[in-house]
Amino acid sequence: MSTEFRFAVNVTPKPGILDPQGRAVEGSLPHLGIEGVSGVRVGRRVELTVSADDEVLARAIAERLASELLSNPLIEVYRVELLEATSSTTSGARSD
Amino acid sequence: MSVPIGVVVFPGSNCDRDTTHALALAGAEPVELWHEQASLDGVAGVILPGGFAYGDYLRAGVIARFSPVMRSVAGFAAEGGLVLGICNGFQVLAEAGLVPGAMLRNRGLRFLGRDVRIAVEHGDTPFTHLAGPRRPLRMPIAHGEGCFFADPATLDELEAGGRVLFRYVREDGTVAGEVDDPANPNGSLRAIAGVRNAAGNVAGLMPHPERASEGLLGSDDGFGLIRSFVESAAAAAARAAPIEVTTR
Image (cartoon, rainbow over all chains, first blue to last red; front, side):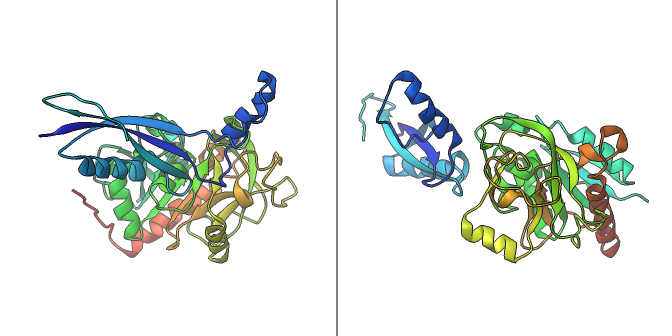
């Protein structure tokens, strides 16, 4: 029975890569009166649903999408996170 | 007979007409290649023009990379065909892995539309041989993501292999710095404005030579690059019958 797997793909700049957006966010923190925050990195998050027989197959598809399209391996890293799995007959939820 | 040069048109391309105009001025026969077509119509060279292909969604150039025409362009490049990417076209080539590196968001985070000066690092390539005497070439940039990036090992390899084609320079011709130097406004590493692949037949640059191709536009410094491309493509076409690249 096919299951719907909901994933989030989190893409962030590689460590060491210049991230002017992150720096701009960090630079604005004093204006908010916030102290002690560092290492701000701005990336993007893509959520998507994969229909597959099991989680391994679904994750393989999400990983392929993340590495070939959603991120550029020269400048970014990604992490695939399972949010929810819903069977097409009975619905249930779980997280990883 | 004038040589046919393809100009790829993606949804969101906006320098395609400037490019066909400059190509015609250089004596070529410009051929517009729609992104959905898999045939290159027997052209002798391909230019990927500037713009915002597919809205630059996700990352500049990435979605264009998967279009039918780009599969054919990749095949054409693999056969030794001449390909030049300008601005967004450079970003598409980089995303497709046809030229090295990646373009990061400009260091200052702002979209920049202004004139820059670039130096031709190698005047003996198919892209630069008619660039004229060594001097800084003035032409516009118009981009938000133009900060050339590659890891240090790749940068060293590019330099050693003579693959850095263009660098941002100051008015006096000295190479611009990486940080806080208005001569390198996007902050490109080692002030790199354009590179080519290892085989030497695919090149990309962020500045717009086609927008500096006649005196009326304020500068014709870019026209030598357009003429170089046209003449090189014509020479390649004369050496061999155009290779018809077909892909499924």
